[in-house]
Amino acid sequence: MSKIIASAAIRGSNQIALQAEQFVERVRNDKGEGVKIGFPDTAYFLPMAYALMGLEIRTLGDLKPVLAHIQELLSKEPAEKLWPRIREFWIDAGFLIRTEIPEAGVIETEWAENRAKIPQGLLRDLLGRAFENMHSSAERDKFRTRLERMADGKGTEIYISHRGLEEVVKDATNFGGGTTIWQPRPSDPELEAEFLRRLMVRLGAGEERAKQMMAAAPADARAQILKSNDGTARLQVNEPFDRTWRRVGLALDRVGFTVEDRDRQNGLYFVRYADADAEVEKQGLFSRILGLEKDKVKAQQYRIEVREGQGAAERSEVNVLNKDGARDGSATAQRILTLLHEQLK
Image (cartoon, rainbow, N blue to C red):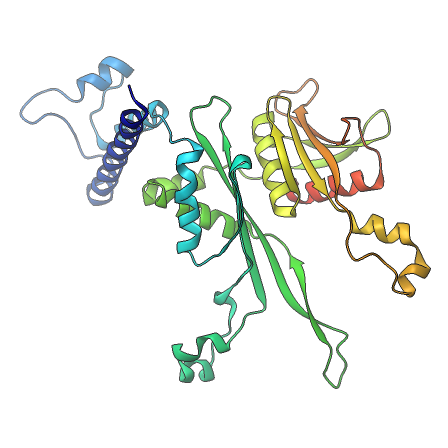
């Protein structure tokens, strides 16, 4: 079978399954889950579902496990097929694309103004839409989308991470003045979830199914920094490896690490990180007073290791390794763990 025919079959089967889900959703909203289903003027319900799954489908509510099993059987579109659709999604949402790295599965937007934060008022109402651009909000947002093949090779996992900036006044006095600077603000999980829901709908998931999948996502687990026997720090996460791997990847995106490569089989993220605090400490007090600090901090290579916790399948460990793969006990490694802990706790 040619790739063209196979791709068409995959798209068609997913589309038919989606139409079935949407039809069931409409009937459920109209008549409820207790409505009876079956073949007209017969005593039969759905014989194939009974023959293949052993389920007697007599009411609309009984269809839930059947539809869920259909989703398990469907082949998913590969990452290279999803790439142009995801790129188009962000452009249609009003964002410019800053970075595209297909081999790493990363699309990142430019910083965009959060128009929802512009205050409403009489002046704005009077000026109307013609002068909309005269107003500016004090918040900026950017998003990174990461595509990763699932471990079984049958689908693609999609992650969306948010980074924010806010404009603040520095060195202001009672007489006004001062300067404004942009500084980071915390990532917004609600924004991430909302754009992920919209993307799911854009890629073919029904509105109701997208809401159900988002609601089914487990709450973030607790994580804590512990000391290992060799004196280095490690991050313990009360989640199994698969989920910890996904959450660490999302945390790296949120914090802004440059992820150069990933090796899921060995649980390794290859990253670059520029530790501005370490550079300031190295320069010393007089360099800072005289304004001799360097303009740019050089990013160093690290490996973030995720592995199963010892003696507990539902627990994982996260370690910071140097570029050669050895445990790193430096202050910078500790700061990296602290940044990850803030996202995972």
